[in-house]
Amino acid sequence: MKRITLAAVDYGLAFGIDRALRDLLSKGRLSAVGCLVASDLWSREYKPLREVADAVGGHGLVGLTAVLSGEDLKPQSQRWVSTFGETFKSPAWYARRSVTGLLPDEVIVAELEAQIARFQDYWGGAPQILTLRNGLMRHRAIARLVLTALENQKVAPLPLLIYPQADGWEARRFARFAARHGLETLPCGPRLPDLVDEASLQAALRLHFDGLPDRAVVVCRPGEADDRLRRMERQQQVEQREVQRRVLASQTFFNTLAEKDIFLY
Image (cartoon, rainbow, N blue to C red; front, top):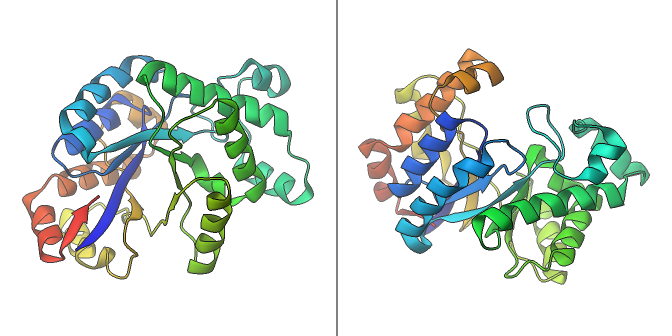
């Protein structure tokens, strides 16, 4: 039996997304949920997720999706705000500075610490998983700052790190890097296809998990349309989220998992 970690990493982005993720987690159709504590919704949406997580016991992992880029979420540290204002930088900004060694390390660590602390203050415990939004974990210089923030916050037990999809060599290299610092990583496969037709997505899922290593992370983006989500995303993106939500909740998807001998870990 192959174990797959089916993860949704944008809890807190919109009420419709949060409702969908809680429903799928309660039905055993999700393995992990990453929370966006940089969202203004976190302070009210953590509680219903806590109730679902308690009800399913150890079935679902709940953790942090740390944010350093993007326009729809706000920095949580005063250090970041006083340095750069109330917006994050673009992924390209980090890519350039990671190569040249010009990252503002102390400012980034302060922001990561603030988000880790905000998660723990509301959740009442350490994050079980941790990833960086927009694939920023692939920059080794930023990954080192994540480790520094975890150490400074004395997070225990340490979370599983979700590394962006990469070829086998790159993922193994990062796993060795994390292991030297006492952390374990989960390999990441291709995310669920963004399709607007349920039958097409069901057919794609029959092959999607083939060839993935044990415990591989597959990121999905289920959701339910609401006014906030419609303002943030294009209509096609919202429709893709709704298709994923219906497919993952379906008996057909459950049958596919059973036929493929896949256990959502």
